[in-house]
Length: 147
Image (cartoon, rainbow, N blue to C red; front, side, top):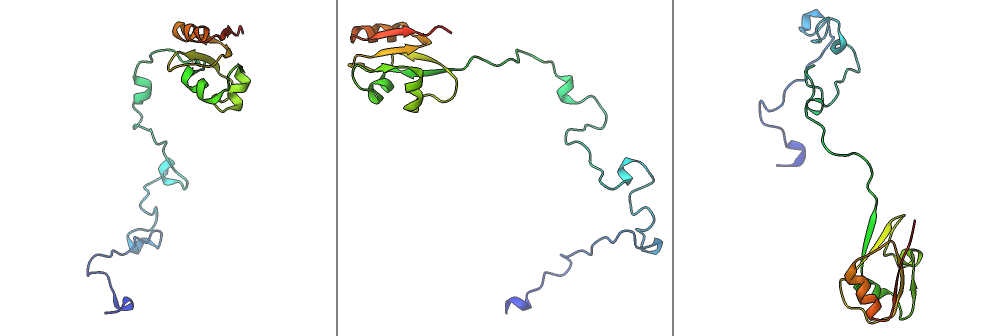
């Protein structure tokens, strides 16, 4: 058997319904679309969430909570700063962007995860108690940014 000799099994292929080919075809006149109305016109399409005219589910359910943007805060651990910066460096939000620890306009919070051995002067919007203690214990400064 060769590829050009292959044929589909008997009865598996159906003839296409030919619409608008005269009344004798059985699909002439309105071409199975009924009389008038939106559905009889070309280009007809319902919205994907249409529920037959009943009140849609989205409108039936109660609305809860707030819908306002949150203040975006980026969390950075001391262990990340230890790896990326040298001893005695002044760390600002701009330097954190340069080192790709922060993207966009976000407020920065320093957390005390990990060990710190280098002296840093860190400028950030928020510090955890643990982070502040560790920075000062290592001989550095934790400076709050006021905005």
